[in-house]
Length: 167
Picture (spheres, rainbow, N blue to C red):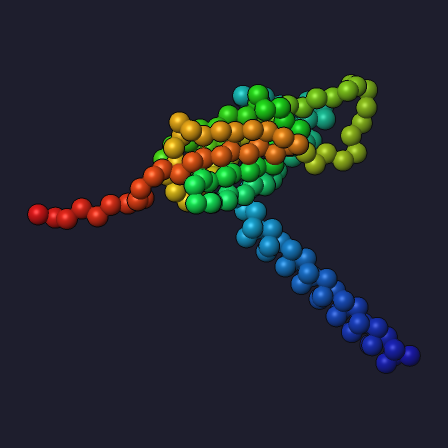
């Protein structure tokens, strides 16, 4: 009987170790792949004012997952911004940095309900995305479809850098 309990304890320990390793691996991958996508949402202009209702329990951080793709002619940036209207997104490019800012509005169908799960973040945000090359902002285009904002940025012709000889 004692041997059976010892063996059961070893099996439980082995399974817990395997589960912990799987969970740790998931967190490592999330942080390494999505660390830049973690975005802060501020819900009101004056952070000192207390929030009320369901919005007070919603997260202040969320993922705005994105990707940056480069072709011979352009850089394409895609960012998932579900639940937002295209009019609520602003794109600014300075040098080789793209700044995406906007606001995700909290909308409630009824005021006499109770939320049991609140995982979506609401409020104003800004996400910074480094671009691998300088781009021609005058020819940039953006569109929004199915919750994905796509920004097409033609690359600047010529070299990214230039060597200057010292005389």
